[in-house]
Structure formats: C-alpha cells, structure tokens
Length: 114
Length: 115
Image 1: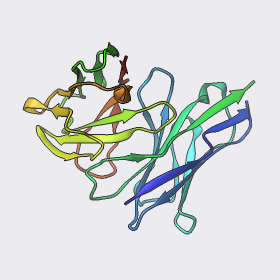
Image 2: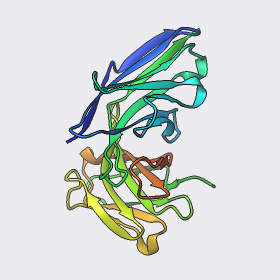
Image 3: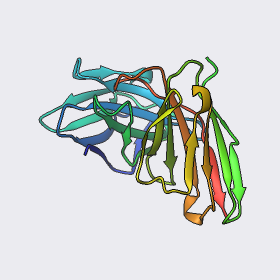
Image 4: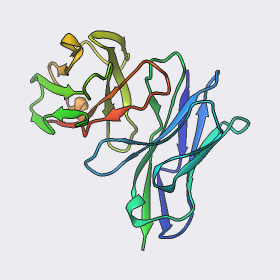
C-alpha cells in the first residue's frame, strides 16, 4: 500500500527565508503526488500536483516541488517566505487505480517569524 | 462555483446520541469523498461515491457509520451511538471526474465534539 511521511511536524522560518517542507512517499508503482495547504478554519486547498509529467512542478503562491524517484521524495520549497504562508501543509499520494482517493501525510505546520 | 458546503460547522453531542452531517459538493461533480481529521494528523479517508454509488469504504468506518448520496447530489454522513473517540473534524471533498490526478475541492468541515 502507498503512504507518505512528512519529516517535521513543525517548521519555523523567518520572513524572506527559504521554505523547505519534506515529504517522502512509498509506492510500488509510479504515484501521483500532491501538496495541499490548510489555513485556520478553511478547507484544504491544492498547491500543486505531480502526475507523471515534468518532475519540477510549480504551484500557486510561489511554491514548487520536485519529484525525485531515486530518493522517493517530493519536497515543497519556496524561495522567500511571507507571513501569509503560515499554515498547515499536507503531502498526499494516490495511484492511477485508486479512484482519486488521497492518502495524506500527518502534516507540517509552518510558522513565519517577522 | 460556490464551493463545497458542509453543515453544520460545529456539532456538540452527548455520547450515545446519533448525529448526521451534510455535504453539498460543487455542482455536477461526480465524485464525493469523506475524510476524518483529528488534531495534529492528516485527513484519513473514510469513503467515496461516484454519483450515487458508494464505491469504497475504509476499514476505519465501523458499522456505526453510514453514508449516503441519494440522486448523486448532496451526501450525508451519519454516526450512530457516538463515542468520545468519534470527536474529530469531518471533511467532505468533491472532484469532477474519475482521473487519478483530479483536484479535490474540500469543504471547511464539520467539527464534532462528543461529550
């Protein structure tokens, strides 16, 4: 069965610093990978997704992620953090035959210090 | 596109009572998913529908839980004889098609507290 592991339940960065949120997946077949963001009292929103096209995926709000098969990783990055990026971030995986059902990681809470 | 709507936003109930939540997906979205999220954890898949057909149920979904999607539009999730362990955020999501890479649109959830 497929799964994702997010390293670090809490990450704190200074405004303007690099954001790096880590996600590793486990899957016996090529996966589809996603990053979702959850702001307080709001539903999850899709940041970006990898569906076997380009390995470097650009998303909304300046985020991007790179699919690395050799490392089974899909880390999320943003060159310069903004205060509005403070939120909970979830990595998720699905397979082509899973009917769109997502398996989520445990989440990483991002704090941005002024 | 009014988004996925969930009602109520909050529900407080006593242990042993039955509760029902409602989810209204984005119009014409064929797929509807239910997830459960506890504090500090990612959403856990419960069940999903393709139109009115319930295609998969997680083994997390005990026989006290039942979900329906009559006529393939809104969906309800009922929990019978609630237990304190049922306290969680219940999330609904919908998507437009059957492709694995389809974007899921999530509602804001129903927060259940069982006293």
